[in-house]
Image 1 (cartoon, helix red, strand yellow):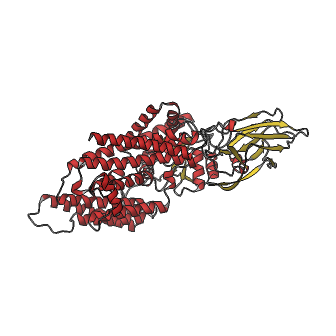
Image 2 (tube, helix red, strand yellow):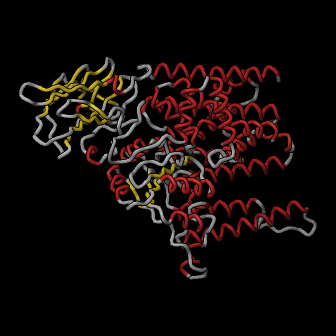
Image 3 (cartoon, rainbow, N blue to C red):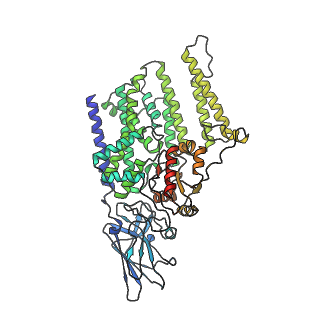
Length: 618
């Protein structure tokens, strides 16, 4: 046992070192410069009275030609020809685009009465991050340049000039007027911990963060998945074997979280959201369906003989189970539970802002380990409570077969209509009832266990019938399958009208909706169809009449990022949201109210406190 624990810590150190090495490979640009050092803007007057604007670009950085824009306090201005050596760049994200290294300038004719010029630009670091769109104000009389700090494409007057998508950069101050102004919030405090804390303190903190999140909706689906991997072992399952499988599952899950940090530094995106494509989700659903079939004895799933031989050198007869558990853990972290929490969002924000991938990836690895501590306990001590042989184990295997089929349906629910999902749940419930013996005839001397199983099967069959009727009526909520029929028949009292969220799909729509707040506090709710935590929030929090009354005085805006289009990614970059669920509160001037942002699972009391602080801060 002592050697096994030592091996675990060696694996842990190896995984952290691997994440660090990968980070050094992918992010060669080093720590990025502050924006004003990377792109120095100066102004001078020519002999003919025109104002010459010149950017001095630090080595290893560049500005996008399409990122320049110009306006005055009187009106928008056409952008003059840019002076500098334009270079064509095949950007992996933006395609073929024109950029400038070293130096670029523009000469601007200034009319009488113009008191201020506002210029916008955007650039990137070679092999590193991209800065958010920035704006600077130039006084045409004194030639003073002001408005330092990176801006965001939030001002409506500036958005038409900015063509290249923005990635959160190292500076996050806002334009002085217009658009949306974000505040340092919960995820910002986590990013601050990463920036200011010692390495051991940071890793220990993220381990505790993960432990605190271990029983949230993001992690709960992983328990039956790990249980299914354990059940496949049959009578070979021992506490030591359970520990090995759960460690493989958790280490792979933690490595997936570290990978999130590396990808965030490379692309500025949350890999979990990128993987919510129909192809990826459908493939995982098919994987769970295939994993369910061996549980019913239809065939034996194992690795090829050559792989089995290699794995057998580590442990005789394991037949690739450790690899299977690792694959399940890795997949579960990236695709099965795509949840964003404050620690995860804060770590991704820190990585995107600073390029410190090593600490960020190691912190996310520790976060995954914290989430996995109860899973390891479940895998280690759970087998001790189960009989080692007999028909009982066959029943356990079949039960987890239904669990895997349920996981497949749950994944498919992100792709198919809700009524189709209900019909699939109905079939699963009736199938479960059949295996429980709901339709079997019991003899008078049948044991109590058979009678309990038949009773449970009849209950499952009844629930399956209700689900089928609900699916036929167009209902999509398995917890309220007859909801549509009850409403149509007026069999219940007056129902709440529901919350009137204004849907936003494009960045310019967001600006318009914020401008229509009419003096009210605005709630921006980032959600998605595939977000399991969002569904829980909408079912248990937002549908509550007291919550609806609480939010009735707010301007409600829903940012639906289900399809993760470029517009959706731009919206999340502007909001510094790495994924759903995220709630942002803005005052009537479009400024985020500090200490009100909610990331991850939301309770009624937590939402009420945030609304109270938001209205007090407005």
